[in-house]
Amino acid sequence: MSIPCREVITVQLGHYSNFVGTHWWNLQDASLSYDPETPPGDTQSGVVFREGQTLGGHVTHTPRLIAMDVKGNPSFPLKDFCLTYKCAPSGREGSLMMHKESPPAKNFFLEDLDKLDVSRLPDSQLTRVQSGYKLEGSVKVWSDFLRIHLHPRTISVIHQYNHDGEAHRLEAFGQGEALLQGQVLEELEDKLHFFVEECDYLQGFQVFCDLADGFAGLGSKVTEMLQDSYGGRGILTWGLAPVSYSPMRDLYHQLNCTLGTVHLANNSSLFCPLTLRGGLGRRPSSPAAFPFLTYDPALWYHSSAVLALALDALTLPYRLRNNSVPMWQVADTLAVSGRKVVAAYGAVPFPMMHSSSLPDALSACADALPWKPLSACPEAGDGRCYGQWATLKGYEGQSSLAPGTEPTTPLHSLHSGEDVLDAYIRSFYPSAPLALQLASAPSKLIPPFPQMFSPSLGAQGFLQSRPPPPGSAAPVVSSVPVMTSLHSGPSLGSWLTELHRGAAALDIRRVAPSFLSQGPEMADYQEALEQLRLLARCYRDDSSGVMRSSSEEDDDDD
Image (cartoon, rainbow, N blue to C red; front, side, top):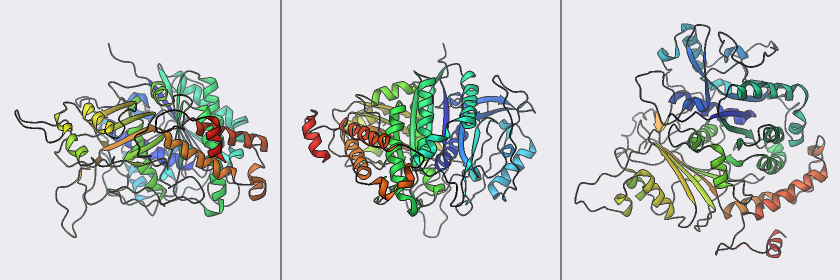
């Protein structure tokens, strides 16, 4: 008996979230196969994609996605992104609103995609665009590198606010909260009903939400609506923040991140902030650095690609074809005792030599875990952890020893990749609950994913045994192994406390009176800060694992 496909609906809220989402969907598109002779891959495409037919009768896959952004995103007419269907699938009839504007010139990548569309080849015969694009200087909005077609009901444009310019920007949490009413609410409900009604086994929603601008407020209302309307479904929310902000609004960014963390955590099954910034405060440390990446933190096109690679692994548990774990189980495993905020860590890419084994790769990282913070939350390094979910994509396989050969390390004596990874992580977290999943296939990269990798990597994303000759062209990396971890531990208590202290130290009515002009009320703002303080307490622990008394915690809060 086949396991039913448990569908997921994705909601993307905000400009940076759509940057990350575009890279993530391009990665999912790369893993699709239209050849019936090809063995099925590790992931089940039907979890996040819906199957349909074009007017020409060709089978195609479009994301089960609702993407919201302000005016100016996407930068081209909606018809350029949406497929035309033979007939409307089951659901409501929708109205069409036309907004006529002169589109900007398209970059070379989009021009090539248009040529492929004009050829009207079925997806099974569609030649993938393989040119080496360098879009770093031309990408302004996420539609500049979107390679897949969308369903006509996917994109929602908020016309009250602009992407460009200084006026009419969605900058404050209260502005976003106030948006979910009237036409915006009706349109979102209509899109949700359409996608939900065509699902047979809906497991939940994955929400990519901007954390540093007004979309944090909109996201708090959207997740609240999902919680009220679809109780019992999983809601996994990823709060996304870019490295580069406008210095003029850094105070707003700090306040939005603070309020967004509180409300998104309250309304979600699990909430994970994702950013390469050194912190969510006004004076962060240096951006996250990865030994085998040469990315530019200031370029959204680059930083969003790093986070999308991490999300390709972080979201793997509930997308697997075999041994998948539903969203609610992932959340229940980690969000224990009210600890609904988790931190993410990632080795992007995971360092492995070509033709080496997983024990070989992990033995080379015996002194320190290979991953870096993806939530601006450093690991405590003391072995204390309430729960962890680790994922590895693209491992080479188990160690193979000839009969009578002595294992070089304890890891080499183990017989499965799961056992090897379990033993390795437990060497750092001996008593922590641990769940893990492995997938043999790496993250496959196709244009226009940026080539921002160290010359030490070969074409398959593995470390080369010899450095490339001086002056030689770096290979085009077509895939990379990735390791990630979702982590709940005492280090998050310190992170949340720091977030609370930064906001509580501000006299908001004096330094940012306009922030509250559209809400929240001052009393609601203060209540949110108190909720954040109490949330931080949930993560506090002493070295023996015994929770401290309230009086001790109150002393620390002073």
